[in-house]
Structures are given as structure tokens and as C-alpha cells.
Amino acid sequence: MSNISGVGNRSSRAAHFYYCANGLNGFHNQIISSLNVLIAITSFPVNLLIIVALQKITSIHPPSKLLFSCLALTDLCVGIILQPLYIAYLLSPYHSSLCYYLEYVSPVVALSLCGVSLLTSTAISVDRLFALVLGLRYRQTITRKRVWAFVIFSWLGSSSNAVVYLYGYRILLFTASAIMLLCISTSSFCHLKIYRILRHHQFQVQERVYLSRPNRREVPINIARYRKTVSSALWISLVLLGCYLPFVIMIFIEYITYAPIVALFFELAVTLVQLNSSLNPLLYCWKIRDVRQVVKDMVKEFFCSQS
Image 1 (cartoon, one colour):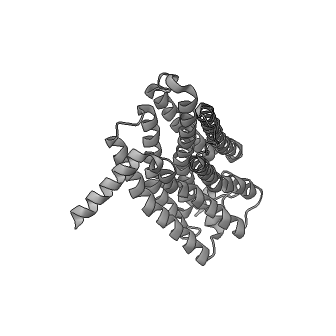
Image 2 (cartoon, helix red, strand yellow):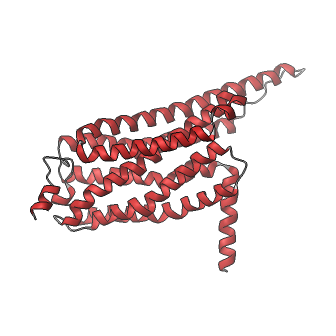
Image 3 (cartoon, one colour):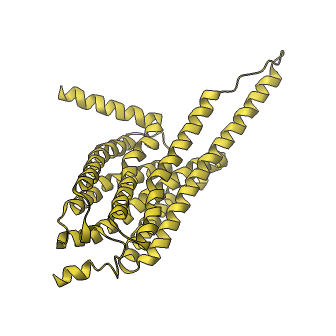
């Protein structure tokens, strides 16, 4: 029992944890566990479909396709590796050795997988901006080799954060929070820049058409296109903010003090981060028409074969 107490020492390496020493209200624990089971169930098939669909599509630029595949594979691992570990952690008996050890294993896996997922999501936003800004130079600048280098770097960086967690929570507190805030800001900036470029280009096209018309009647702006662009950018930014910002806030709160209500909101914040893995396919890959069509065909084929 002394070993367990050493592992669960709140004053040393895991001062930010409260769950295994005190637990949550039974009702709250059931809600959080049920939410994570639902996330795990949806994350696996959706991301698996996206991975298979991406392999069948040749129209996507290979480096971009690699980023989408990396994102879907990482989110798939969240569903089949991280979620079962986290659910087992939530359902394990308080003060048990299983709970205390899972209290260490789950964050290590979460920092690795969710870190790669967030970095890859940000890279996809940057890739979209480069595709718009660079034009013909895009394919020469964004190469498969460079994307592979980024993927390896993101895995090494996220794994390093996981190792830092085991030895210095104070360091992780600032590095992980800074990385999350930087990724959220970068993604939001890229989508805002994309919208402004498209808006400027649309006005230029409308102006040329207007000047070339003999009667020079006002040409209506394509409001539907603007709304779609704004909606897409807004949803991606809001989802990143909604999934990761509460976790950053709760890290700081839990570092200062831990109590039942703080533990509850911390576990909810962790659940939101993992929910992002179920939402990413809809935010990124589902908006690609070829991917959407292949997935629809695969689903129809599956149900036809079952009937």
C-alpha cells in the first residue's frame, strides 16, 4: 500500500490529480463515463471510414492527403487506445493501485495522441492558407517530404511533452498550455486570412464583371459563398476553442487548488479534448466532396450487402 501512496502522492509529481484520492459523485461519474463511451463508439468507425476513403482518392494533393490521413489515424487511436484507458480509469475503484497507475498512463497517452491531433489540425489550416496564397508555387513548397518531417516532429514533440509530464508538471503546465493557445490562434488566423482573401478576390471579380457590362448594373455579390466560407472557418475555430480552451483553463485552476467541483470540471474538460477526435472528420474531411462521396458509397455498399 505504501507503493500506491507513493504513486498517488498529491504533493509531488501529480499534485494536480484529485480523482483517485477522493473520486467523484456517483451520478457525475456515470455521466462522464457514458459520454466517453459514446465518443469512443463514434470516433472509431467515423475515422476508419475516412482513412479507407482517403486511400481510394487520387484527386487530393499527396502532402495534404498525408495530413488528413495522419489526423484521421491519430483520432482513430484516440478512440481505440486512449478512450478505453480513460474509461477504465474513471470506472476503477478509488484508492486502488489500478486507479493510481491509470492516472499516470492515461495522461501520457492523451498528451501524445491529442497533441499530434491538435498540431495536425493546425497544419491543415496552414496548408489551406498556403494553397491559396502560394498559387503555382504551392506544390513546389509543400512537398510530401516536408509534411513527413512535420508529422515526425509532431509525434516527437508530443511524446516529449508526455515524458515531461512524468518528471515536471510545472514545466508541462506552461509548455502544453502555450502550445494549445498557439495552435488555436494559428488556426483561427489562417481561416480568417482565407476568408479575407476570398472576399477580396470575389469583389475583384464582381468589379470586373460590373465594368464590362454595357449598362453597368450592379452585380449581386455571391452571399451564399461568403456565408459558407465564414461558417466553415467559424465552426473550426469555435470547435478548437470549445474543446481545448476549457482544458487549458482547468489545468491552471487545478494546479492552484483541487476540490470535488474542480475535479468534475477537469474530467469534463478532458472529455471535451477527446471529443475533438470525433468532430475532426466532420470539420475537415467531410467537407471534401470526393471524400464525402466515397464514404457515402462505402456506407451504401455495406448496407446493401447486409440486406
